[in-house]
Image 1 (tube, helix red, strand yellow):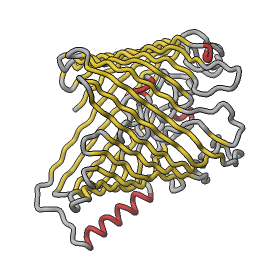
Image 2 (cartoon, rainbow, N blue to C red):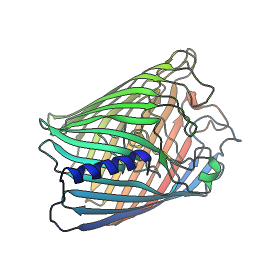
Image 3 (cartoon, rainbow, N blue to C red):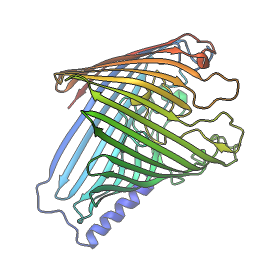
Image 4 (tube, rainbow, N blue to C red):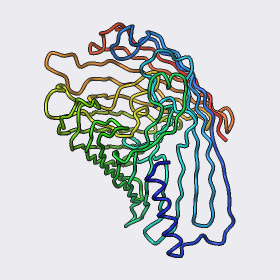
Length: 428
């Protein structure tokens, strides 16, 4: 646990004692939960242009993820500790295998919270946490990806005029070890946060869940222990959902980003450039049968066609996820949420609470390319079937097929990409 978290915990305890805040005379209760997931993935022909000496044509990986969570409640006090162990096997010489997939035996959550403070202040939380905010495109706890992002700091949950408003001051936790050899060997080292990288802001949600507003400031600078892009960027998201006319449902999220950043984390890169970036997601759909929901969707995000100018237009998704919009991550390494234009269709069929089948199609283009360059990335078809065998036991099968467009038909593997996975998860 980082220095920030330790200091805040000490401060919160001291304030509680000196102001006479005490737990109500209630029984101390404990609870525990967890999950075990094993997944096999296979890919033939990587998506992005590469060479044979960088990445093999075919890649197989077995990944495991174990989560154990313990929780204690006493009056208005709540304490949570969660340990996660994420590992990968079979995978050899794959440059895409990083600490986002391997993070061995790490406390991803360790926090203390006090609730029911006043009419407007519902809860104060200090410690190491994982978070889901809104659409999860900017800040999220992982589902598909093998390792989880954590943050250390303070959260204050409030209610004003029917809006749930959370203020937060956090330091993102870096996963260690991060070098390729250690990651490949599933070695472990404690993760830590750094005082020279901070994420703070406000997340607000209306009582009817129709409106969600994200407001994030990310500030970072280089230190002997942490190399960064020196990002000093502000991100604002407005997300609106509406139901209308005979069961139709719609959603739109618009995000703007401004500030300064450098092009890379290299120590030789000392040029601060202006950031002007944006992202939009929208969909509209309807329940077409008792079991099937169909929607049309579009995702777009700004990108650069000139890395040498004074402005960065590439969208930065901060600590958000992309799996639910662009397809599987990890071995498949789907498209980033940057420099992209992707209209598509998606259907989800739920049968008897046991089967959940998703079929999705995306047409993919680069949003911004230099004159004379190709912009068509291809057609992607994705399928996923979840089968709830027993209440605690779920099987999952899925895959993706990318018919590559002209923009990707280069490198050693110009042929279409084929990906499949199968997973079993036991939850308790």
